[in-house]
Length: 86
Image (cartoon, rainbow, N blue to C red; front, side, top):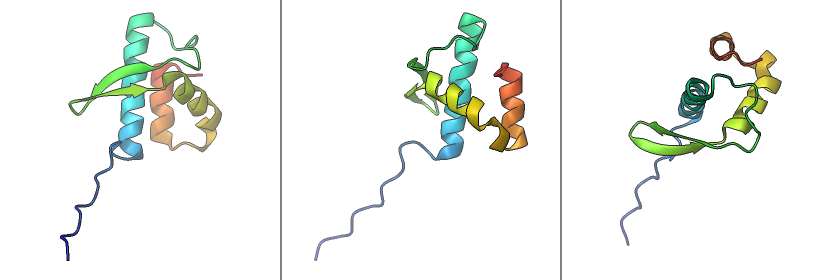
């Protein structure tokens, strides 16, 4: 009988980590470009989170955040407001 394989650790770190990466990508883009209003849906922003580089689909995330804003928790809506996401 062989030894059991170790459980795989999730690459993304979960939804909270994905949110943090996306917010970091939005902040980076905002700092560089001055606005988030013209981000193309296909734009990918590269960020380093917890020592690893990640490609964040920033355009898709912004589109989803705008459309789901009404159902997001208040703390996340506050972050979107801080970033100027309409």
